[in-house]
Length: 176
Image 1: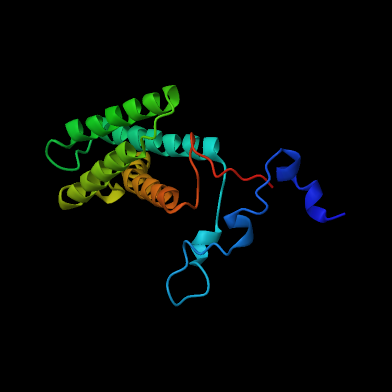
Image 2: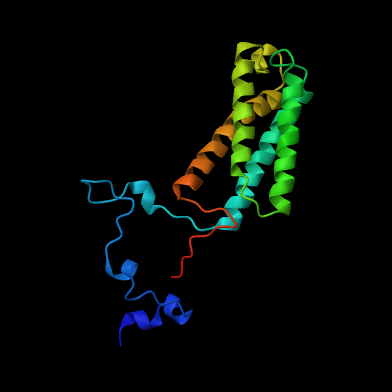
């Protein structure tokens, strides 16, 4: 008896033996002249609902950090408060839509993260809420979280587009 008869895929009724993928080498991601795909192509995390909730949580925290910064005493640059409130409101809408639907809205989150990064960079040209500028430690921490969480979101979306992680409603159909 061969070992593949006890395969979870075969037990689930999925039999790809004899198909092109089962008998021929798959070299979709191998560059010409190379023997192997890039290392990152071997990393696959198939937790679609967890990744979706993680992406939504990161955008929610971006919105919270922007709102807390807008509530603070120090305005990073003139008219920064309306921009920070807009980022917070957009993050709230993003999270509500993300939780209520199964839409793939990661590009919208990229726009929110990009706006937060741009706001942070504009704040560096003004008077950012740092401790040495008279801000409290939590206020300075929230200001820095606007940048750090936005960068984290962009890294997660890049991994999603590269195929390293999967976000619901998609999955990679791992069978065994």
